[in-house]
Length: 275
Image (cartoon, rainbow, N blue to C red; front, side, top):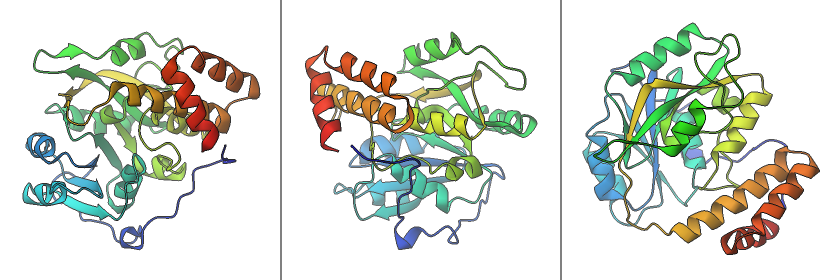
């Protein structure tokens, strides 16, 4: 397993931090999308965004990058699949105080980003806000949103909502400086439960993270290329790696014991051991 105390990946030369992009329409926030081979979904979702968008294309082969450019997004064509770390590359290129994440099949509800900027401006020790997620045309409440609303961490003074140490990446807005200050999303985890490591690192750096249900994100999950078993395997792997990197050994042991209880968990444990 890796011996890592803080994610510290080398970024491609074409995305050096000094190559920042002008923010032409909204002074506070840029939307960042990491994607790969999802051109149809991306075309649909980009039509809903009402802030500048940077798309980090993870070496797509289906015209995704061209579709994003046609829709008016700034596109970073990465030479290899960086997974969730592509969002970090995009954040380095942004010039706004805040960056909001979206998937290629999600978008922020009108007015939510403006409100999020207001909340963050008035809560200087809060780095991240997690929005309420509504799924599909029927707008079902995402179970993770229900869990965040019942967070056992309570609502400490100075936070605009319940404190959280987990979230869905497509539903958060974060201070760019704080996000980059802790290394962003790690290359080690790729996709699938990559949020926990970032949450732990932000909290360890003294930042607050809060669930704010008045902020809304719409998520219309695409079935293209989805493999539920592979997803469970990646999530099990990443829970173990996150525990190994940031938690005491008893927590690592508990995560490993939990993984042994299912076929996908055992496969994830094997993947983690090979990392």
